[in-house]
Image (tube, rainbow, N blue to C red; front, top):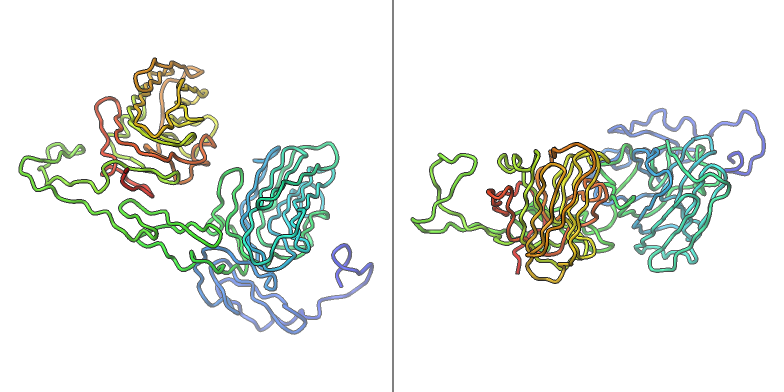
Length: 487
């Protein structure tokens, strides 16, 4: 009954909605909004965190489930101009119906201009985008299977787009016209949109998605599908083990299709973080502890750390923010000494910088690239990079020393010749507010400005700052996850 192009009506006058009065005596609780479900029935559109016919029940969301019959969707902040020429999006989803929109964002709400969408059309995935002079429509070679998890990766560089579904060969296409950049103003809609009358004409967005969306990653940066949403309507929980909170002791459940893993806080390990690491008091009159923050304090019994040599697994990290440690990070000089063994060819070893990360924000880091040790730092006027001449991802212990004096630095690996370097500009001082991270970070892509996408797999046994401060790696950590003893 709707006007073209959404319906078949070509003309008409003074035609209204038959069900206009069904919400007159309906109260949707907790901020819900009543709409007509049919000519004689209503529907409460519930905000995120509530469910029920009247939005009367609290809901602890974990993995979003979108129900096409209840017009559900969630919306996230606009992508604006951050992805003018390039964007890569990864989506993990499980469809329950053959049609519906998974993603949509656009420049305008009048049906014209730039847009990007991912839709299901009779079971086929379609990646559509328009730079302003004509759309590209990239369609999967085969339909996806209903009720099963799928992974799709969308990549757009200028007018060229590529879509890869599961393990199938990629399909590609090119947008029409001469424009090659895209801007967005509308929110990023997931699972549906707020108003289907305002979508771009060639976006393929006609109805909501029905199914689960487990993960969205944009340019290697994972989206928090729950806390990052600015609005949501009728979003329920998917049928997944993470919904039952299997991770105990503060562990975070990380879904992986039908399975899960737990990111365990310091002090716990095991599949569900159910195993505690317990410190042991050493019974000796000759052993005394020393309080670095208060040297005059009375000595206490020595504690044997539950983890003496930390092992990192790629999604592990340890963070340090102690007063004495912070004094040795900021300033005109740095001196790091690290003992490490790893099999990782690429990954972050050490990081300290100013957050949020930006192009001219200060930082210093040590990492691995192709197995070589790389020292990077930026004092606010340009980045310096020093690389070792040999690789260390052989599973053996190696010594790394990185020294900086103003803009000048030197990197020394084991007993090899030093590698010197200098940062551009006149600035000499490193300013950091994040403390020191070892082995990785929680939001590593965003917080390192895409310098790293994961941490190392391996062990760190010694870290010394400024030659005089030896970090007690486990005892002094103020935060961390997935740390076990190195074998």
